[in-house]
Amino acid sequence: MSENTYQPPKIWQWNSQGSGKFANINRPVAGATHQVELPVGKHPLQLYSMGTPNGVKVTILLEELLALNIKEAEYDAHLINIMEGDQFGSGFVEVNANSKIPALVDNSFDQKLPIFESGAILMHLAERFAAFLPTDPQLKSQCLSWLFWQVGSAPYLGGGFGHFYAYAPEKFEYPIERFTMEVKRQLDVLDRHLANNKYMCGDQYTIADMAIWPWYGALVQNKVYEAAEFLQTQSYKNLVRWTEEIGQRAAVKRGVMVNRTWGELNEQLHERHDASDFEFKTQNKMVETEECFSK
Ligand SMILES: N[C@@H](CCC(=O)N[C@@H](CS)C(=O)NCC(=O)O)C(=O)O
Image 1 (cartoon, rainbow, N blue to C red):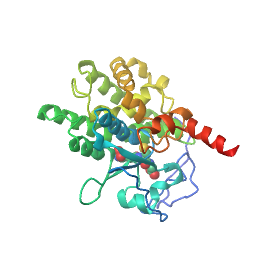
Image 2: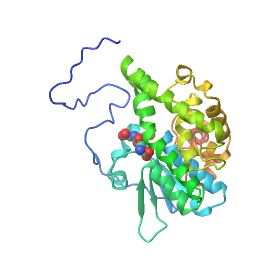
Image 3: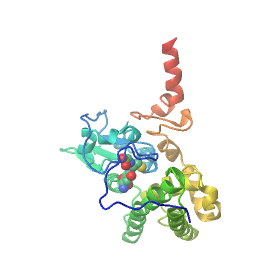
Image 4: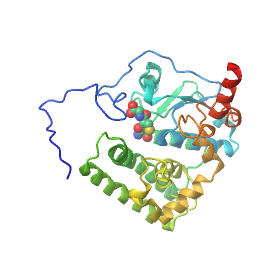
């Protein structure tokens, strides 16, 4: 066991100078910290997000809807940089009182329709466009069960395992043991299910896959927390098969680029306002353009 002398005080006090990767954005109170309106683009769907696993769920679905030629799914994706505190701007808080990305405003109705929580956004879009959510009651309940499983399970993976394994300023055995146990169990849950199912809902690729892939697929591909070896993710063969298959979809490849501000420059599309942005506005192209202007 790690040596640890910490004793919780009688009453907790906020140390705003706290350590750790997210110390500058973590706060014990809700609400806006500054006044700023959200930008609004030309399409009915306005997404306010960042290319994290929760954000990517929605951009994958939007790109999949567009790949089905559903033109009404055209969208503007505005960057909310959570590391710089954009989620605490007054305009964002009006759309999502919980100050977390992703948030969507659907302007297709008489009144603007704000919606937050990735699972709720996926359901809204799938129902509105009658796609990627089965209508058969058996399959629909399976799809929604897995969708809600993901939303309930991800905090153990991200806030629990990922935080203590990759981000905490010191390594502590107790939380790493606890959350590794749970994440390995979750990986086994998925692997056993995918042994008998092509996708999370039998043969149909649905919003359940789009919710689970950005988290557990990224873990398998060693794209989050650098924990693939530690967790031996390659041993979950069915999960690996499913991860690779979904990763090859063109819409998924586009979805993961949107609102992404790290990694290879040609894989970062900070804002997406048009389908052509994937070709002309990735960061490698933006840098080239800036270089042109500075000459
Ligand atoms: N349950 C929420 C979780 C959203 C969430 O945790 N978003 C993170 C990024 S992945 C965030 O915005 N964090 C900013 C913060 O905590 O201040 C959902 O599924 O939409």
